[in-house]
Amino acid sequence: MTHPTLTPPSALQQIPAGHLNIMGYVNESEVNGPGCRAVVWVQGCLLECPGCFNPASWFFEENQLVLVDELVERILANPRNQGVTFSGGEPFWQAPALANLAAKVKAAGLNVMSFTGFTLEALRSPAAPSRCPSPARSARPVD
Ligand code: SF4
Image (cartoon, rainbow, N blue to C red):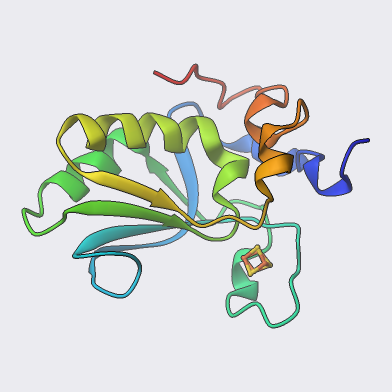
């Protein structure tokens, strides 16, 4: 059975290749995971959880488009960063671009963690966001 929240929002198709649509970015945080880390809040979430502290992150329309490589540079330019946290919004709707970012910062020795509103079962299902047909303009294989 397909979970209704696994239907890809059409606005994802407007994200240019190699970019993320984010709500915000913090270059140094000590309250979003272990140690000192960069935090990427992606834009867009369908779950509408009661009590969500970040409802401004729900819409999928373009907010801040950033190049993945530019974000990687900013993260690695700060020697205090031990890792990167993905939050949102729902990171897994932009999984291919975040996986690309994760691979690059991990290669530089940083660790990566992600918040998500999906269950592990949903993420492992054939209809999981990262397995959905790639958005036309943002399709890029995960390294
Ligand atoms: S999954 Fe997170 S961002 Fe989405 S509605 Fe729930 S708490 Fe808010």
